[in-house]
Length: 263
Image 1 (cartoon, one colour):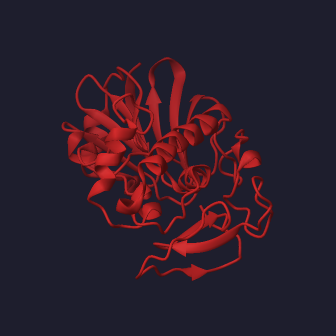
Image 2 (image 1 turned 90 degrees about the horizontal axis):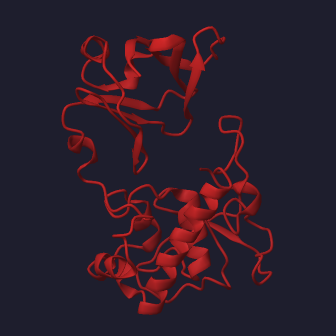
């Protein structure tokens, strides 16, 4: 499939190169494949690579050209045979890149959590020298790629690990449980088409199966204790105080908050 031209109603979607150069260089390019790396959609072209980061509210939709566009279809790729690839983005946080070297953006990303090479031993090796709290470390895309706030909370609950536990204080058993829990949480999310938490993403069902995320003040499905919410590294974090007890680590600081979380 070929890209005839790009229509930019929100030029700031384009992170690299300039919007003018982007429109010129994308014209006539052939899309050879569609891949994913971490939170980036990767479209190798016959010349260069197109990267798309959807951010908070982005959505890519392949539609016939005659289909009416939505109010947030800010970047449109006109394809051959009467198709359009539409980047809808209500909050306009998304980014697109056209690069000769995609490693300039993707090169510092960590391992894929569902890849064969991401083993429990590799996770143990990565954790060994890090004293950072485990929750923000899991969200660091340089540590492990593609893990978001929801899946980090769900994985830590399954593993029975408090989100403020220093990474290098985890036992071998905890690391093995965490590795399995990360993969299981992602696999279940994929099987349920992700989570639909607001009007932006529709069709997902995972939100109906959350163990802790967004359930502050509700009983834990494992033990019945009320689920708590704290703020860790500026991210709403949900956990069960009974299933995920906090060890007495000096210097641990967090803000208690029983309100509902954000994504």
